Amino acid sequence: MRLTTRLFLGTLGVVGVLAIWIILVVDIRLRESTLDESRHELERQAWLVAALWTADSNAELVARKAAMALGHRVTLLRHDGRAVGDSELALTELVGGGDFSQLPEVAQALRDSVGWDIGQVPSGPELRVAVQAPQGVVRLTSDAADIDAAFDSVRRGVAGAALVATALAALVAWLFARTLVRPVAELGDVARGLAAGDLTRRPSLTARGEVGDLADALHRLAEQLTGRLEALKAEEALLGALSEALSEGVVAVDRRAQVIRINATGRRLLRVHDKVPFAIDQLPRDRALRDALAAALRGEGTDTAEVIIRGHTLMLAARPLPDGGAVLALYDLTQIRKLETVRRDFVANVSHELRTPLTIVGGFAETLAEEELPTEQRRLFAAKILVNARRMQRIVDDLLDLSRIESGGWVPLPESLDMGQFAGEAITAAGQAASEKGVLLTAEVAPDATSVHADPTALRQILGNLVHNAVRYTAPGGKVHIFTESRADGVLVGVRDTGSGIAAEHLPRIFERFYRADPARSRDEGGTGLGLAIVRHLVEAHGGRIQADSTPGRGTTITALFPRPTQGTTAPATDGSPAR
Image 1 (tube, one colour):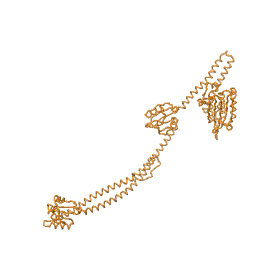
Image 2: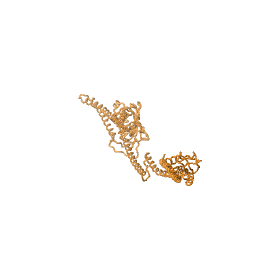
Image 3: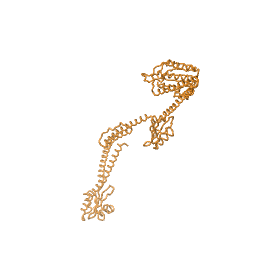
Image 4: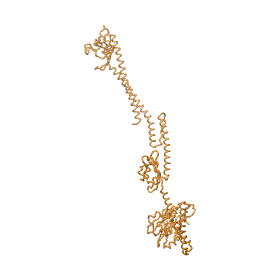
């Protein structure tokens, strides 16, 4: 029920109750007052008749004269209550032989001098008053219908006035309720709008009194709420931006074990895609992670622990929140551990690669120190020392080139190059080695891929390394083919051989430093294990990509994609070339 209706009905109810109460009070008091006045009037008249009734007078004659003068029935009684005169009936016509001693008013008058009663007769109610006189009892009877009629008239007037007053009060109550409820309803709408998130709502009411004060208070509340919500949104946005910018994964859990916040890094590391909030059961079922979260939810902090979750090496730590819940921090150690492994492998590989030629050089040098060694053997040992020294020199040179490229010390200066020319240079450079092994070198430049946008020194070294590798691992009678191909995103430069091929499990790692699919054969062929790593870095420095495809026993194809030049490309500065 609306407030207007409640106020109207409440006011109308109060006014109605008051009107009924007034009518009842007036009814009772007016009836009593009217009855008392009529009784006292009859009493005075009865005393007047008593004064006129003497011992010598005729009682019947006195009763009739008095009734004619007063307009009431007059009955004169002896002290024993028997009638001696009546204004309306003869003594013989009176009921009970004219004995009135048992009537209430007569009995009271005989006892207390004055008595009265209201009786009911067929003609209607009547008022009876009796007083004790020297000659007996004077009894007057008046018709009470006139009293009731007057009383009913007054009652109807009071009731009509009450109805008019009630109607006027109802109208005033309705207008007052409408006047009071309209601003209250407006303030309620504004409050509901604010509660629903519409912070633009403001009360338009300007009035004095309590309602105006309430409107002002609501206006100030809306302003403060808007300011605080904007501050909270800004803080939330800042917190979210900071959380998303972290390289560590952050997972916040409330006291009900629901994940309420997780940043992008945390989703990536844990491979979680559910929309927050979600239960912690959706997180990976790693024992260390679950134990850390359970301890933090109990209010206990945990030490950092290193775990492997879904292929990632993570350092995790869980801390309880002050109001319940927990926060889980994840730091990805995968790259660090991989780099540590690479570093260890690199140190071991370098040590191994250098140990063999150093051992050979040291052994032959000790032998050369003997004076009786024949000249032919001295010449042979010196040649071995020279070969291994040059091999160590190549390893050191390749390491320096690789280090310079990886550190950014070398930047390519790309320009449009003629692929036919560079393919010919690569074939010429590897011609002697190919001839010695009986390997056929060929080149085919596609008509739509005759030029490549690349650094000339880098392209020369890329082709040289790929061709020498192909010749090195191709059996006599085999073929090494240089080719180009036009692609939508650049020009593809490739070298294809018919050599022994590379097993599928080795293909992903052949561009790593010192990685060899067949280490013993590589060293026998004189390779350093760094050529393909240098090629990969040179190609990637141009913004391109390199790929190897091979089938064991059928050969290997290595392709390098060089992007096409963009408009406005300028050559950066460089401090040198990776090649010697």
